[in-house]
Length: 255
Image 1 (cartoon, rainbow, N blue to C red):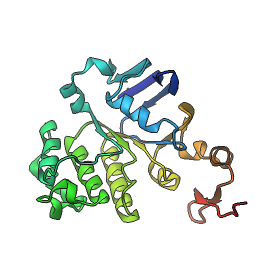
Image 2 (cartoon, rainbow, N blue to C red):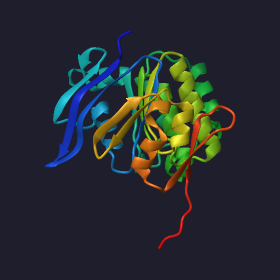
Image 3 (spheres, one colour):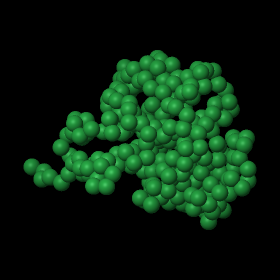
Image 4 (cartoon, rainbow, N blue to C red):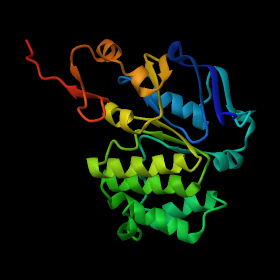
């Protein structure tokens, strides 16, 4: 099984400031991988490098055993889709037109499949509304629908659930997980560690632009590792049913 996306010794600098240093990992077909870490760890920067939005200073990104920068924009869109963290609309495009853009980049989805995606994400009533008149959560679901309709083999998502209520967060991640079970791969930056534990097959842990761990959630999110990252601001307990850990904010007095 050849990993469709392989990253070797990737580093990115902003001026003299290193934002990523020596990142190494690969994503397998059908895998949902979470990128976790404190604020400023380099999660968004890594996704921008992998999407081709910015170019790393050193290292290699291979997409289906070819250098990422050897693909044209149109070729890359067939294999790789990207949902950035901030998608604030500058113009009032209709939702149906934004979704159509995703369909324009896709070569294989039927109209019925597109209708199903729109229905699953509960955005059918929004189709004729301008995107800039929607709430943040509604906009996020529209852009997620566009990403799915693009039908790329690898999906890159930067905190796609940040604007969503817990019900729609669960809906989005269950849909994403279903697409991975059908053979696609996804790499998602995520802050909610409990959500990462629930849905992700493996986790890439970053801190200050450095790769701390890349393994199963159970091996990455150990109580010791969580304490190292978040100090004593969180509590780690075990779920009584499935024995998975649960991470909760800890209340304490400010002196």
